[in-house]
Length: 144
Image (cartoon, rainbow, N blue to C red; front, side, top):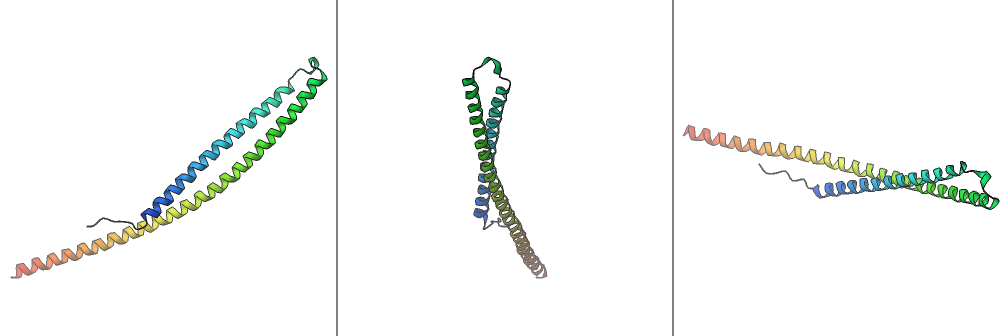
């Protein structure tokens, strides 16, 4: 009995590699999102730390400086939130790509299974035919 060889095996490998690549990219994007969320949280905590600042011991210049610094921190927080939104959009696109690659891979795997079943069926027919020929030859030898 010969060995089954799937003709679309290279295509299947490419789809698997693409799927793995996209999974890695999604993981990198998730890491970037988590880093941005941590960065945003640190800025929020820094702003909150100024709420507890003792205002009665500082002069007007320092109050103005703190207010400007809070504004700057709020702008940074907004920028980080925009970056997070962009990263989430990219992640969604990658997830959609992953779904497509997974579907394509499953289709190829199903096709491979069908071809393998056909191959086994054909091999069984060939084997049965050779057994029939052996049986006929044995019968003819015994008859002679």
